[in-house]
Image (cartoon, rainbow, N blue to C red; front, side, top):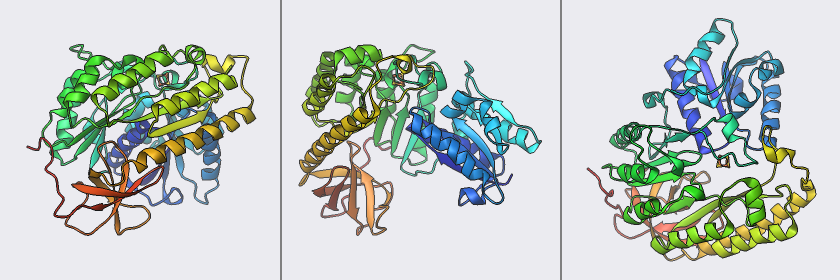
Length: 444
Ligand code: SF4
């Protein structure tokens, strides 16, 4: 096998795992193909958080089999962990199955296939390899860094603790060494990753996430630090203080609330109440008034009545999130909520989801409109997908900003942009007069 093509589904953790997979394939001497039909090996890096993506992956295996010279298929990610050796029965083209806890063993799986074997590597070892030098990073502006793997929360709807294992924090020293390395290569922004990142505990020193965030923010050369995902019940006052004291820490926070009614939150095993969530947001906004909040919401959780759903809409109106990732409840294997006997009708779920989307679109548009006329520092990521004469970048609060090229600016620069127009999902602006380059905060 000389060429590979990687298809990635799901969250940032999966996107980052794909970078790790690609680095290992390159170490095996393989090169990227332009598409699945040109590749000797196609990696499907999968997500099983909802049911529909799992079906899509199964049908994708079927489609790959039909290519005239069909590639070997490597199934990685959460579906690999969930289905294990069953995937070998789906197709003779599946050469290996590799769960998220075994992602550092891609080279071993490839060698097994080259020797005519099929490999199934699943499960979670207590001691996982974090050789960040093998990561193949495509972005020259921002890098993702794993901080915590897995999750111990066991929300009753979620498959993650079963497919990504129990929480495993890296040492603070390891994370800082990796971020220093990224800063030394010129990356301006890091995104720290964990399913419940603020549950972080350094296994050596007991340091918590607030300590780690403060240390990372102090690294010279780095302009911005983002982190995802925070669990409301682990968001303590020390972490709020670090946000307040460190301008390099992103003014964007993803803080899933999932449901607005306490009865539903309890059945979800979220371990906070609506009132506690609202109180946390009030405290956050007191110290960081311009924070851009995003969230996850589930509609149609078993037992959700119209009244419960109205409480979700009320919470959305009250908090006014910049972005909401909402999904209809989908029963997942192993999870308690899949066995609840008061499942909500599919049509009701869809109708509620539709109403929720209408509200969140309206709120995001209004919030973005409020930024028209403001000057924002924008980190340039690259060309806009629609127009090569336009740059696309992100503000400090993670909002997407597009603006016409024209100055001496380039990818990785942070420039001042005045916002002239706003939609629900992005902003349009123009470079402010002058060079517009800003000094990198804390640059060495
Ligand atoms: S906190 Fe809950 S929803 Fe988030 S990954 Fe863990 S179990 Fe899943």
